[in-house]
Length: 74
Image (spheres, helix red, strand yellow):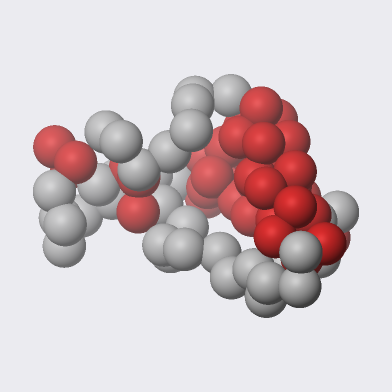
């Protein structure tokens, strides 16, 4: 679905971090859009269940958000 930049958590985190840093350097307060796991919903539908276990959530879904917060300053 179109709710993510890509499949690689590191790539997504790197691009997201750079975007946040660009916004913040221009005086814009960056906020992370969407909840973690939103891009994993069944059939890409809003309000559909996101079937994932704790390992996938910790290893794939959360790292880009963590990078954008800790490294990007969101």
